[in-house]
Length: 317
Length: 252
Image (cartoon, rainbow over all chains, first blue to last red; front, side, top):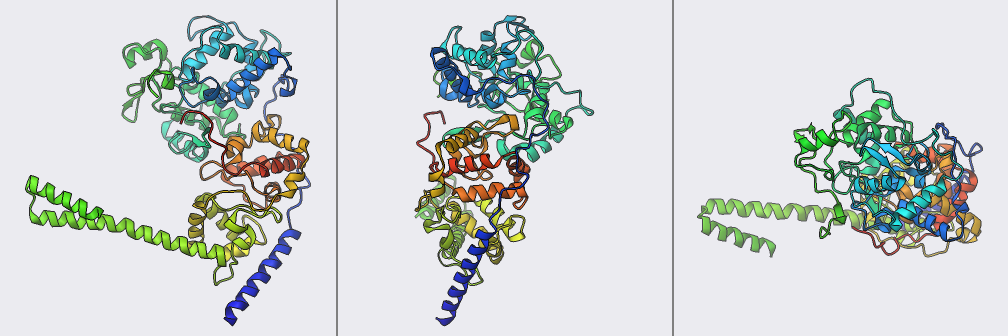
């Protein structure tokens, strides 16, 4: 009894003492805690702040576009076949330079695209995003989803020069790596730098009903026709932007290796599929940058893909 | 009950395919072992949980005070003193933090001796036990958060939901989840944590008195934040509900 009381008293005293000490040594603001601008290649163009969105009918459409862009499965569910959002690959709601910003794209359309061998309007370009990156269905021309997204892109481009080279467009083009990109090295980079957020299985993480970290492959990711399925595009994006907030910290070699690793996993079928994987590769993936139709770990990529379209396919969910 | 049913099924199977009695006995034995192992593990876990629960309520006999004396009833936090909610915290995160406090890579004069006085087994047990406790609001209000003016709260909301990429600051929600409810085992909840706690942690990363965390993410990010940013996000998250609002109507 006596002992236990003594222990309690001692413990209470220890806590009280520690509380006092703790309070008195509470960390103070760091003297040098001013915002540190990290070394990132500067972009010449800065889009307007959200506060400048006009308070009228046009502004409402801009805001709708921003919502669709940031939470695509919620605001454009009929056209979105997976759990990704535009902002996953166009960081900061499409504002960030070197992350394929909307303002750099908008002022460079209409443009000829080798992907479909004709001149595309900006609207048609966005249809491609839904069909491939969102593994969904292209909204019809004039659909409010496209009007909203185009309004948002147009507004972000306020003051940007039209049809001029503009710094920060697309993803950076990396030099050819010293060593050919390698799956095994990529797996190691993935485990060390990517799995924390995207999971060891690459399927991302959810919380509170929201997809917080996007899946990088598998049925809920972009399909084989998406631009991110090209190793060079993925390497450029990863080098400039990954891990999120630590862009530029991976070596070029690491970026190439892990891009190849990501793009060597099964994902939904290319919606342009023509009969066989071999034929589809010949028609649409005839490039060393595409792993579609190649053997990886004894598996022919594209052979076991789930059909394109995900949740937009009638009756699948 | 289950064993009896299973054993009946084995016997029936034996009769049908004409297995020998010897085989039947062997299967029965395997079934017993198969059922007994999980029961043992469960018993152990329950005992560990009971031990951990006792520590949280009464402390241990080698210098650890009751967790509730600082972290509040039901371990939901103590906003006035800046002690965080630890109920419902992910087990790997708690283990990692207790180890960091014991080794001194996370410097906290109050918690360092306590973490050191816990055996590794006690740390594991606590981590497991805490992760199973229900999350909720602290019983006392966070007056510091309530006092934050609307401009500060708004600035916090913008940083939380959008970040400030001109300074390479990602939105906090991007990793800590919607409303800062926490994601997985590596990204702890910010929602409903005391202003003083959140402020202290950001200052510690700025000063290097808390280890850099996975990929050095938080030490890097905190150093890009101004004092106004710290105050703003701390006030914003302290006022967020610690449990997710009714899940959004989005696909599973």
